[in-house]
Image (tube, rainbow, N blue to C red; front, top):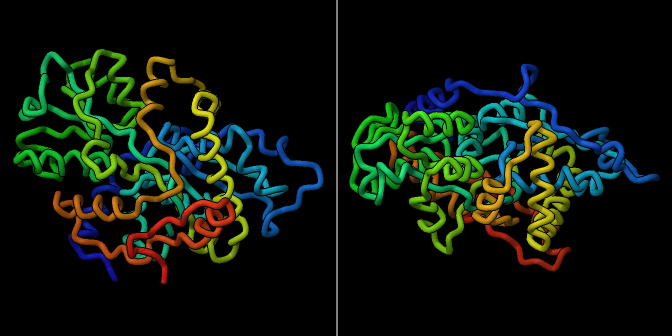
Length: 367
């Protein structure tokens, strides 16, 4: 179903926002990986591929990818097919990379996945697995904001117009009875769209009074004196909501299902290892962050950030549908047709082989 004119306008606004990359070339920066050294002697290529290109953000909410690269889980499952990771700073740039073939599979938040799927009329990507839940907080200046009602009249940062956290904050504010123009961010609360890397400086300078942001940005603000006023997880049933999914280019899924299965098997193994070895996994994620960005997170930021994230193979499809409804209510888009956005057949095959229960697509799966 073609997107409506209003929906196309919202997508255009989002796409027009500045996209920051970690390198001046391509869509994202090449991640540091010793994949070639990890290829076992006698290993064979998967689906005849020389490489599989994997994209992710340098965020702890993408720790499945960080740990999977760092500990060699992906390379082990792909055999002699080399893992080629790339790091992104923004969802739209990762979607562009997927559409152009610069990456094959990616870790990404729900809003860019929805936008990418609907903008292409359902032809660009599929969500093929879950990765993480939680890890989003409203943190504020405790001298200016002492209770939830004090947020009214203040300046609150979100990462980007129409991104997952922006939509969540607008929805929460509306539930408080406050009126905000979604496009301009002006109203009973002023929403300041600020890149996560800049938000700590904006907070320190006093240009924002708080932020609705993912980890580790939330914990960076707390380390500078901010206070956690609300954990978004408390607003959801069972305190679970999707923050990171796994997506694949549809052409790659059709042509190379064995490679997709290998990546999903590695993701399931990685999540199992993360949950069984949280301290080692936290260290591995931080090591990969350091390799990718040149700087590891200090313990006073890493530790609290890590505790608020749950790693799961379940894409929590019902919560993605709810997040889309929240964007509609905020006036950022008209109701999109998400039927077919999920294809969980390979993931459920992997889970069955592991003796795990299948996951549900909330009626939004491929027929």
